[in-house]
Length: 305
Length: 207
Image 1: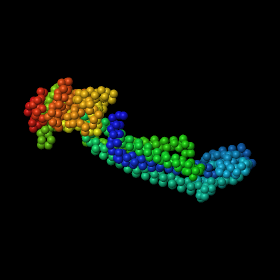
Image 2 (image 1 turned 90 degrees about the vertical axis):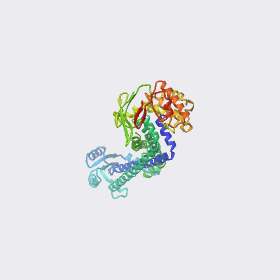
Image 3 (image 1 turned 180 degrees about the vertical axis):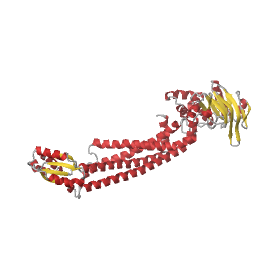
Image 4 (image 1 turned 180 degrees about the horizontal axis):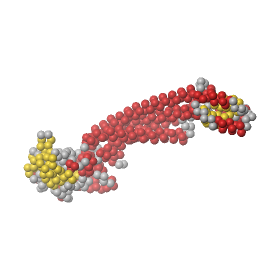
């Protein structure tokens, strides 16, 4: 253990309550930051889900040949108002049906692919264009009927759903970031106060070190290290608590939101998301501790000289 | 090594030094004041030279390097209360960027020299005044400084303990170290077998 690490650890041991309060405040900040980060991620994913899901389904007549279907698919793809055109065959339609009725397998056994129409699913670049696009597609000879997914959700239109989600997403971002910023500022101030108190109690030591030739960097090192230790423990504790909560809640959240991927279902992606948040939080924690401690130290070192 | 050239220092209306000129060569043992050498204060006029470098021209970032070349013994010991004897000595090595693998050997050597080798793991509050001054001296010696500045090293000690510290300083001086010591202790001045510069009202009255 280097002399600076030993000094920092000794200092923490000597004033455990100051250390606990610093770690507690930082832990709380980064717990909330993790929760907000996940909420922002979830609202973004929900928004993307609704924005990119097929909004219009054109059901095709049984007599539609693959050539005609391919020609219509190309025609739709080249339309500037239309995006994400996808062909769903009868067999795929049955699979979708089976998935949707997986809680009652008997329903799936009673049907064959022949009763499901093949379809071309697509989104529009702007939901305002949906109505005219539907009218145009209905005129195509191989199209039997056209469905608009917004009708399924009970909303007046899909744009209402997306609009509402966008508002929620904005509120989560602004509210969350404001809350985290306030907590971050509190953490910064708490660190500043605690490090200033440390500097006061170590005033004699700093004076002695300065007299025997210690550079300002030598004097600063253990104090800055102490602040970095607080922030790392704070980040790890806040992040771990949030991770445990999400691990506990994720099965219910996934089941409640069904198809909407609010959080990653794949464990690897789930942990990758949390690892990314941890990396960013560690960086922020170190920045907060470095600036807070350096600010507190600079005046004291100047005085000692 | 150190030379004062027409140095004057006033603290308001008090003349601390007035037109002081003297020189200290290697291996000498004299009494003087030290704050100017340590660059704790600057002269109002005149020059203080260390190895021919005018200290008043040193930049702030060069001060630590200057002090690392000097071993300092303080009247009030200035030991770090929350570190053991050996850790107090190690601090000087750490400050001077001595590689850690040399620390044990050097610390053991100086603690033996000052007679504290058996108290290496004690904390300052477990030591007597004389022992604390030995810690201060060990810390000054361990970096193998060019010069030792002793600021009233016996000021807080009884006569017998002060005698012990003086013997130690004599021993160090005989090994070739230059020592500059400031004292008000008339007894020590009378017994001194070394060059003495006596100041009164900021002026040299005996050299």
